[in-house]
Length: 633
Image (cartoon, rainbow, N blue to C red; front, side, top):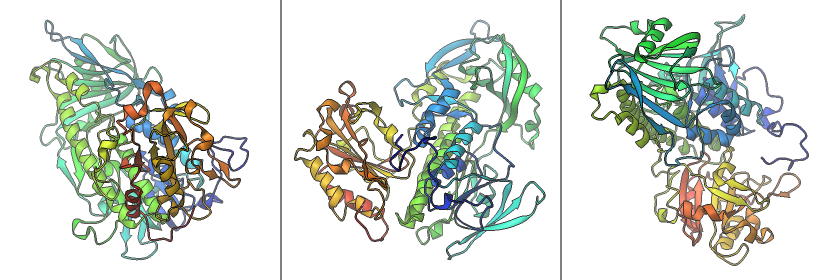
């Protein structure tokens, strides 16, 4: 963490100085806002935390509840989400309080005594080193708390506006604030009273029964629910030996259980198979009591027993897989003729089972995707056409999720005798690990992702996939670090310069590129507003092929050592050397002649270029820039 560059800080360095709309921020929801977020679930809170980093943007988030969420339904945190938490600054803190999944056990009927279950196998959670981040279990409410803390300590001092429910909206064809939103107060002396807010953009994060989705005419399509599961978070006494281990449990004829230990050492969650929902059920299965769910669990786990002592939460849900036709308010016939003003995220646009632990994780990536794009458009960095990419990118991801979840939930509901091989469930879990971990997403070429013309220069950084970190050594303080962990959720583009073999400062393509970045009028850095820090919009880092002891920091080009803050202090933390035992050039298939890797603000690889192609770099960013006058940094 960097601080003191604006003057000495004696308090919590995570509390950023209030700036812009955060100075004297009004408690009351204003009549006009830049972005109105509806719903304070994972997607909504991440979107708010991202937008809160932009002092000039008025963002408000409304929530029908009177206060913070206390008991969350979601709890699985995949490695990609922890990677995202790292960018927001709380991965280490939330990991410390979470349950960490390292193995999964698979229980099945005993062949000799099928009425009993036995442990049939174990599988490591990450057998191939997909990520250096862990797979966690932690209450959704705590995830929201951490994002709320980020937003509250941001320059804009953003906090949710509780007790306000979305009623409807109308979007005009023109005007500075074209979306008029009607809200109703849900508590207090004014409960039921309505008010309107005008917004430039609206983001609907209001769940599977989304009123925002209905207001923009999006339709959900997909499979009707035909299988029910009881879910319970409980404190219980049991003789089941793997109660603190994630388990898939299949009985001979009683159904299945997915057991997930929770944070804190005692609480655990069970998804208990309630069977096929009969036709004409009309929701009756949802009235299954906690006592019935617990009895079913005991039947499945025979000869083991579970004595439920306390119930934190329970529910019944029916598995259905549904997807909206679009994720914004632009119908197909109008696509390309106008840009969207209203967006939907998370359960508002895709629903599926909870057993793959994907709902909260994919929803947060929806929020990460739209948050920085809205900020760049509102700040004038990028054209409004950037917003068209949200629906196109995220709808494909949601469809892939549904396809995966159909297969996983079908396997979980199968009877043991229906498997060709007893280890089929275990084998599927291992072979598909990269998808549920969140790392199979690959955006296709667009204005945000270049064609793979130079992909062979960086084979370990596939275009459109998230930037996979690797070890480096920071030269200024010799600290061994993960390169990707230095990227924060601050809305900046990353330009990683992987240098040619020449020594730092010697004439070479690396020094030529550094000079071009700093001085050329067509350089992307030239778009940085006058008076702003030279790294305000673009985070430029260099990784030399030598180890840190062989790099003369004084000879490194000034481009990689920008002067920042009111005192114009040199930032030395952008210069890295390799770790000889884990050379990033070898680990990520980087060309020894040098390569430039461009990474989006949401951590996805956007372009791979040779050091000697500044014109291609300029061309890529030209399509992402507005026509505003470019000024020297």
